[in-house]
Image (cartoon, rainbow over all chains, first blue to last red; front, side, top):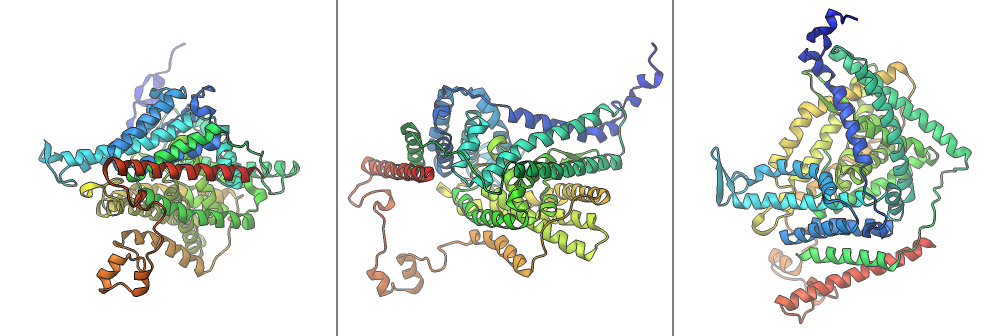
Length: 286
Length: 319
């Protein structure tokens, strides 16, 4: 079968037409956002035998929060190095690969590095010049200030990433239930569940649009597509909420949140909290 | 606009947590009245909708695109209090599970994107749609533009005060390093010129579509000027962070003596509670290794108290 001439022409395919391709970039970016969300949501390294995993979820969350606050309070690089080292040791003992931990921490580190880069210049931080770039002097004090802020962000986001990687979602929600009111945790858990449902709907919509687009579309049409799809998701949201409410009411839900009784903390859970709070108190003055 | 961990000092983070706890409490009580707890799924799905809407890129002239936050839409659909809860749920999920935003900065992020954006967006929409009842999509767009910019301004102020309130040796900034003069234009300019118009366009398009197709009703009641006054007061609260020196009336004896030339006799007699281990040491402890040892001991003592409290709390929780 002979391919028609109009299909062989590059400009007619939409790919060769720069303006038209740009016009559809928002679909690609939307799909990219959704793919990145899915990758993040299922990026877990759960080793049942690990140290962190063996800690009761409430104690795990409280302990990690204490360490995060220890990094927040740290006034010296040495303290931050100690927190980072502790994070690495905890990750190794919990069977979480360092590469995976770094991958999770990288976006915050890259963003912070870009954000604090100008602080190394003499314009923001006067001091002894170590480098001259096109008339702007990079000062030693500025570099140290920037590195300190990057280290703090790295330490704090590393600990959060470790908590996520070493915990099943069910454990996280169970742990939160002991720390914040049930109303919020139940709503948070339901939000998490329905994010996936709505995200799948959004992905299907974007994929359907992408697969049916040969040439580019006009801006107004593209905006109309966005409005109709978002409006549709909003209506679907309300419709699912009504259905779920009816289902819950028919099963006896009267507005009161009932939860399973949580287990008491064991010795090693208390030791973990104690060690983390010890690090927190130490960091206050260091 | 999500402020990551490490950008705000612990003091600032605690201030915003302390400020948001009553807001969350009032919001949950208000939600019980207006949305009913039975409609918990609507709240959860509102949060899920806000999450998903952030994934959508909106095409803008020039071939570029950007994503919106969606606080105004959620507030208009659910009402402002439920909007605060729904947006807070979204931010909590993003911080906890996807490392977008931080744990310590969750209070501040909720203040900016859940509280400021929801309330300003909702009430501006109500006011503008009363002025132009036939142009509700335009009213929603303008409200969303103002809301996202107010939210960005709040974030800029939080970041910009850090060099004033948290510095290390030699005035070195320990957290967000840029002063207000840099942080405010750096944060607000992109929101005024790009993200604000994207938010306005997206909100306007969605409201226009929903109005055309019908279906969703707006929630919430008109509130009197008292709420507007309260919101204004809360918005002005961070200005207190700019103040230098001790808060009025909280002067120490030395500071008071410097201010008025003498220390009142009553204060002179009452030295005040100094704590068991003032300045994390004991009165007879020396400096150097001994001081460090007592410092570590005070940290261990504090930890022991925390463990004891957690243990007791765990026992009470089980009852």
